[in-house]
Image 1 (cartoon, rainbow, N blue to C red):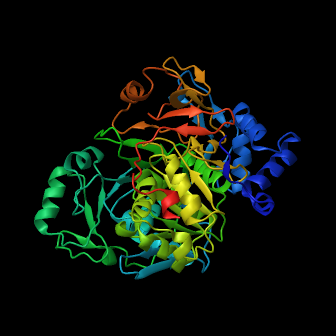
Image 2 (cartoon, rainbow, N blue to C red):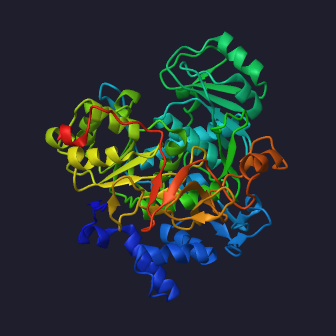
Image 3 (cartoon, rainbow, N blue to C red):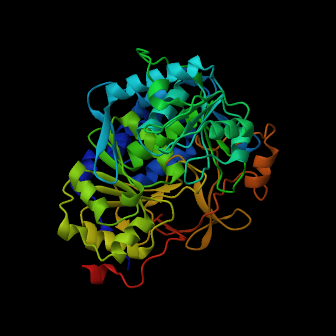
Length: 516
């Protein structure tokens, strides 16, 4: 029998955001049956027009307009629209805190770090937003980027969304130069270049030849620039006061993220849908709180854009370099040095620590660590063994799955439920998630395709440069028009856990038993 590897204490249950949310739902609906996760999940998928406004209110999303209707149904799942008469600004919601608490920390390979308070972050975003506006960037324009995962990327992203432009990270080479064909399809007005290499006039000319729409190229912090390129410091130098946030429709495009399929145009993701679903994921399912210090040790693009929404909670996000993210003693040392309460990592990083024979519970304090979130390929059962015998026994291992193109979760963690070896804890609130056969019929205790059978707020809006949505429908809905399938194989267990097929490998010679 698969006995739990972890179960929440009474104190953790009492303090959990999800527990408070269930109490809130009971008070607002009068439904006294909602005292466990199963009836809450059932309520969330049966009554989406009641559930999502409750999430909205509980998470304190800032918006204006008429909140009815909540959802306009359509013949095709891709045409459904949420909160069509609401206007909001994504950046305004992420920058609701403007105090001296640290918002962002960026650590390099040598342990040196830069940090920004929430007040300072707001000021930096205001400056970059004003600079973007001065170059002529406006609502719907694209701002392309190859910036790394640190402070500048967050600032540029929030500044872009503050004025209603579309944030578009680009596939790029090791030197930070974007893929020319992808850049041409985006037709951006501004390009932020990552890396610290000098950006020559010839490089700038080649980029503008690939995408004549580019008016301004900004070299990342620390990079030298030619006369045709502006440095980050010079671009963000003007004092702009408070940021001005453009109120935009709920479905206004926010991100244009490269598709896993390799499409030259990428997938468009809406601002309101990502905001409300991200906060549901992060506040309720991951149980993030303002006092959390979250180490982001993953370079996964969709996961990174999912986690940035934790700024709306007021938590501290700590970015580490690629070598630390890859696993090894440096990762566990950082957790102690920054007092991390949450680690976001990948299966391969855990495997690297196991392969090295590391037993962090014997060499590091990990005093504040209470949650480990695993993104990307689902962790194999051996990863669960390693976490609980070599890292920490009293920690919630929260593996999530949504597919390579979805910056949100179909299956996720739960602070109120036990953790079983090799299983994701359950289906994500508000999403009618099933495991289906080739004909779209739900399965139980049998392997099939992970799928969502009803509209959900974070469903991508479609491909870029696909005005009638024809290519989007062919690519995602040809087999079953009413079903979103992210290309993940899974099995739904009798206790509503999910066994997700994984490509993650585990070192044959390293086991939790031998490591411990």
